Image (cartoon, rainbow, N blue to C red; front, side, top):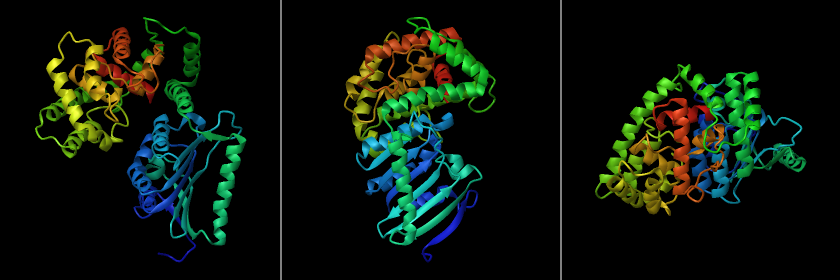
Length: 419
């Protein structure tokens, strides 16, 4: 250990000073972690997720303050951090930019405190994003000291900054409602920023002024997204996604059949199979964040296997979407971490022409079509068989209106529109 206080520069591209590698090491043994960033992304949170969970399980407390300016922060990143707040009650906090803020929240500060009285602070240009931690040219000053020294005044200054921001309303505690509100604004900004600023303003204004549809979808915005997607020659484009998702669905069916037919299935064996559905590089299902809490989900492996056996035996060509959903819900009502996203991914794997996928992405796509009766964060409490039937009926009207082949193509479009 170097003589304290100790300072150096971090910069990406060098394994010894790369932000991602250093943060992984810093979280181990930390008793407090403070994170003040302008932007956070899904892949940025993913990059520290495993180390963060291990540290929290070991007793660490954490504070996250994340800016929402410019709509660069991903709603999914906020959802993930909020899940930690809910799970580790009283030990994790999340604050976001206040609606009435006067100034842009733009710091990038990370604080790690340890039981032996030492503290590590990283201040620089790196946001909580993949680019900030690994991909971009970023430089930060790393400073290590003992909290009993005069240098500890830095921690007091940071604490005063936090208290001032909170008391002035520049930052506020994150709630599910505030995140959902930000989520909707984020999607419109992200989509129409790519299409062009004038088109974005016109489309957002049009979406606000049109009445909520009852049976016929409003398709102008989704047609615009579909055009963008069809002209996108990247792996996110329509042709690439159509091919990828077709092969993914076939792979997913093989995995589900292995889970269903396995004798002497254990939680660990189930987890290994399930990871083929939700973890990269295979990633046979495309709903986001399913890889998180997969270990908790695997504790209900026997209920999931029984549900698959019942579904495979009883599903028919004339089985409605609502009835199929009820088959799974009967077995999985009490199984933790199994929500509408997992259940509808299973149904969609069985038949992509009848069963639509329900997750935040698809609900937001339905909202773009002015079908606004579905909860932004679907759960087993808010999504019953009747609601799923209604969801599939309305999704079918969108699919048909856009000339898409099946719900696989529609889900790819919804995902593209969301991001």
